[in-house]
Length: 176
Image (cartoon, rainbow, N blue to C red; front, side, top):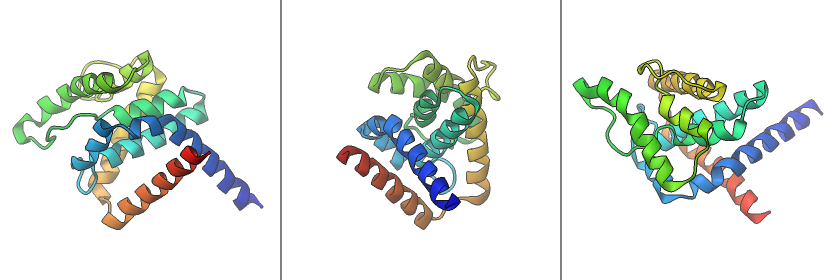
């Protein structure tokens, strides 16, 4: 009985998350992130989806703006250049949030929290401290995901499985 209830809860959370990010995932500019390698075997889109989902769940738990965490988390790394620039790595780490914000604003309207999330998710490298608790959530989830991706990588099979599950959820939502 408890397993069914827990499973049902997870399905509701995933459905709510998908409801918030589905319009963004339908954009070709966001899909283009799937062609950019980000950390080890991750694409920038898979990294951003992980950050968005975990941030969404944490925001729901602590009573934050979960929708802004989902959207800001998905768009926080919306840039298309190479992020493995050797000696210019620190410059890139400081500048890519502005590029991501500009790209995100070009494809959708953002609220103040989402803008702050995107612009300040590199707070530990930049001196721009986040203004909202949602920005802190995404910042720390982003760092945790980056460490996990660097340390453990991700197999191609796991990536494909994750996308099939997400595609199934999105497909169910469009039918309903």
